Figure 1 (cartoon, rainbow, N blue to C red):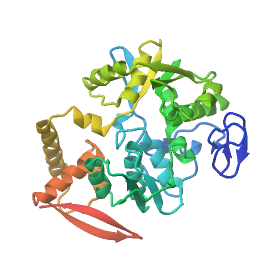
Figure 2: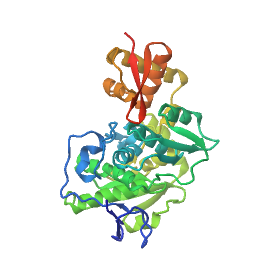
Figure 3: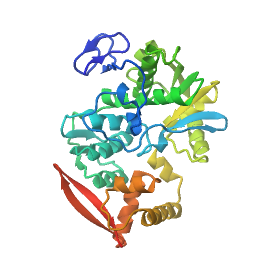
Length: 369
């Protein structure tokens, strides 16, 4: 692979940080023309991504565009774990051959990486601290992830990993496919990885003649800008906008009424889009926020409903992984399927079988006759 700085053009055979301007070095795409494949997930754009050594996809990507109160949003909450991180995780899990992976717990990113890397048979260790949410520990346990306390100092993957950026950039490809006239995109900014990825994607499309002019990219932040690459993003043409915390909270509630469950930082893009004509907001989801808008009875009802769907649609006596069950029923989230299968097992309506496949253990569920 070759890596480059999309700001100054510096090239290297190794990833890292540009010694000239400090921007993360990114994978240098070498496709000759833009091509769409029939492969699942982000691999729809396989020619524009690093060559995979194995193909891992859980159906991430090509998320729908919706209009809420007249504002267009691209809702990333429909990805398997509810965030755009799944796009990057799919690429990293398919391309990387680095062996065991050690992570420090970063909520949405860690959940996504743990899921996709487990599908690739990669041994994952996650370092947490004493404040970790027990719900996250349960999710990691279901994915056979090793959990330890403050044991990782140098994580294998961070937000600016070039393979993650490659997955994130597919949002820009999809926007060009889905919209005839894309003028402006509002994107939430914490560290700035998503904004950087969108810039890279649009630059590639412009370079190949797919678009004649890049759309405006507005990086939205709450309070002061904390991105370590804010200055470099400005040089790349990103404009920044600050929104009020109270406006983002109101937006979280407003979006939730339309079944869009977002964190305040993600909802900030929706707030900004309200004041920008012909713009679209990138709104990511959050499983925790979504749970917060459901009562215990509603959650129990949803879990029971998913169990009924599994019992109806999944063939009896056939060993299937949780992913296989999820694909078979065609609805719900993968994490929801895990919960439903656990409930069915505890009720004696399903049994669990563990097989050794290669160097890893794979759990299969068998629905009773």
